Image (cartoon, rainbow, N blue to C red):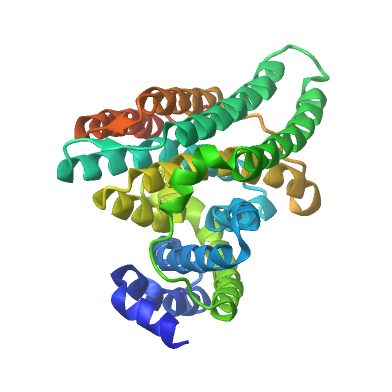
Length: 364
């Protein structure tokens, strides 16, 4: 417990934990104050995501490479997953799909671009493991192809298009999870030596004891789930008050809030000239969401959703994910980076954000 308190004292982001009890009290006393609840829930999720990330890393450090990789696959994006599950149970599929696409694009463009920029401002030229970047970009490209297919079928004039889209989405969900599992096997087992350089650099500080890490993981997961319920209940009214659609909130706000802890680690790594770590976090997290989180949500929707969810995204979202993947493949091809490369990647992200805010998807 002393290690946990020490971490809170020395990490300014964790000082926002004071917002956690405040948001619960506010939800009980003024449940109609949707805008205030939205802001408070965002402030509460950020430090909880930080604790969740640290606890996950500590558990992964104790379990070895293979098991640790699987753990990071399931828990690395737990904040986004819990928020999406809360929205899934409420039937807000637009918010769920927007958060999935937004997390992929935000990690691929914003996190990667900002890491290149921050590292480039301190170091003239930085290098990273091209093999790891190519693998993650390849997995993202696989997921993008999978997202294109349901949209193509839905565009056909057929009374059975909806049923076909649902069946295809279910099959693709299983296929993507299998593909991600094989990717883990490839990078952590059969061709481990290709990626060993990048993995060796990731241990930055002594992990917490396994007991403290597991207890923190369990407690924070419960808190994130409770705060996410308040977030989902207030997001629609708050979005209207701010002049935003649910799609924009999911694509931008949820993605930035859910990835706050990972972004902090990626930016810190870039400033320490450890760009392997930054690129691995950015692209690895994006591929986790595309090939693991999204398919899991499709499967879970059969259990907790008002109706099964499919993988049919609005055309603009698929285009953004495709362009984000192509941008990542382009800028990581050389294995080198400078500050202006980060600026270019961030500009692509800003183009997407501005377009989505001004011209939201049809039907919003």
